[in-house]
Amino acid sequence: MDEKKITTKTFRKMKKFGEKISMLTAYDYPTGLILDQAGIDSILVGDSAGMVVLGDQNTLSITMENMLYHTKCVSKAVKRALVIADMPFLTYKITVPEAVKNAGRFIQEGGASAVKIEGGEEVCKIVRAMIFADIPVMGHIGLTPQAVNKLGGYSMQGKKPESVEYLLRSAKALEDAGAFSIVLENIPALLAKEITGKIQIPTIGIGAGPYCDGQVLVLHDILGFYADESPKFAKKYIDLNKIIFNAVKQYSSEIKTKKFPSKKYFIK
Image 1 (cartoon, rainbow, N blue to C red):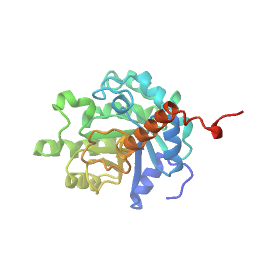
Image 2 (image 1 turned 60 degrees about the horizontal axis):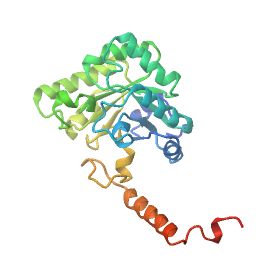
Image 3 (image 1 turned 180 degrees about the horizontal axis):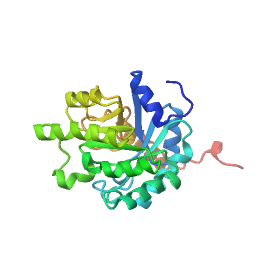
């Protein structure tokens, strides 16, 4: 799909023609620039920034202002990819007018082209109101990190019959409400396949197997930014933690031993 600018309409075309959708998170200008130039189809400014950038234990602490800041930084860098802003905890599961107003800020102030909200059939009233206000919405079902306290942890969803039925109903309800795509997180691969086959909008998987219409991962996980173990479903493509650590150690050592700055690196 060779289009200069990826839009929500492009997502539907990609599903129709069987072209997989690539998505990664980004939280600042330089990584947004690199991802866009590398040809990533969509960039999610995720509330995962709370954990991988701000050092929080979960995604619940990051604020609207935090997320607007990160969204602005990424949007300035991106020319081709579809930028989607994650709406943080307690910014949309409130009153519908306030949810729409907050979503609109990500478009108007943050420069995003769409927002993502967590939840199934219970949030469809909110989705419809956002769509009415001309704000594209991506859904998110399965493991929804903002509900970690209600779920009792980050366990796989969709294993019990009632959970399966809820996810199937929710995917269809989100499509009917106007969502342009749905993230499926940490659910069985065959269930993700069933959902993907039953709806006309694309599914984006994270820990949901190979049958989704696209995949998303946290950038810091694929780059190996942290030494501790990443989620099982996150492939580490490079160990940046080790590379950066060694570079910084060498820099510090060269200052201590007076090797830096050498003649090449200063003006006489």
